[in-house]
Length: 128
Image (cartoon, rainbow, N blue to C red; front, top):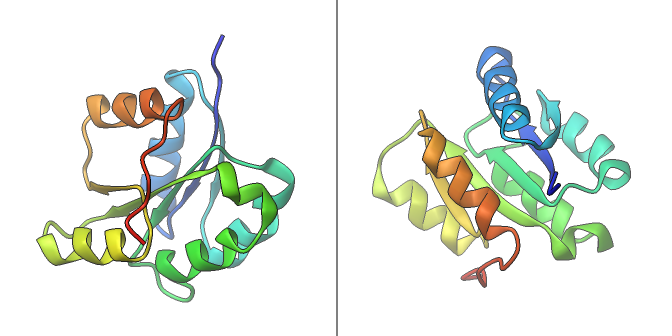
């Protein structure tokens, strides 16, 4: 059974836990981090296949976290998805330019995450 490792990073614990629970229900092995520092500390050992980052967090934002993670060997095979409460098209453009494979606006639908998980077998090229 396909059970990808997914790291959810969001500074809003309720939203992060809810997304983590949804992904677990879809069969994922999930870890949740509530700060960029925590995400950077747990990712090298966990080695997630999919990293879902809130890009508008306080402290280290998702763009910076992704930049730091991509410098690590484990992240070369990972897919990065930005996650934002903003529906402004500029946010999706910023995400693409920063090298994210996907941008997901909050609140995302269940089918959106199913699509992300299905795409893990053949990730798209990032635009960065």
